[in-house]
Length: 166
Image (cartoon, rainbow, N blue to C red; front, side):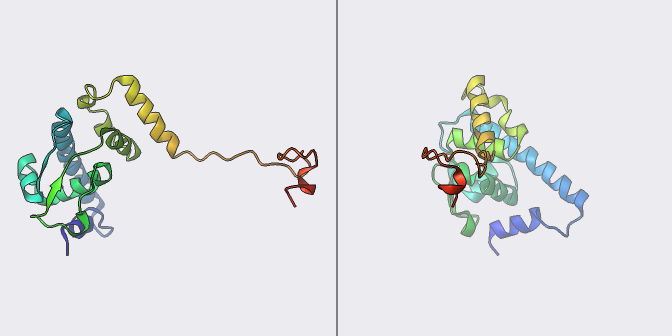
């Protein structure tokens, strides 16, 4: 079983005690927050190494680092091979700041996208714009339905039912 499969089995175990699972996620989110605080303090610095080295560097267990890598992978400039990685797999945490911010908003992780480390990266207006862009990207807008007796939108002058609505 790969590290990612082990992480997902533990983190998303439907048979686990719900209270215990909630505490697991609370502990994980605290560790995740600490890693992001460190990464965002120097966003231009590329952090790379093996999975084990990064876990040691950030002071977290190996499985927590695997979960972190799973979560950040979509925000990276070059995604890591998380599906088949082991503790000796070399990974990079070079992230796209805009993508990372939007992914945090999408995940509704306010404890991450409201971190003070974002302030030197994006001013308040930019953060608001990115937030709104991400929220709008998931909004489905239904176009007004054309009634059968209304004029056809193609401009023919005929009723819709006798023109494009046939």
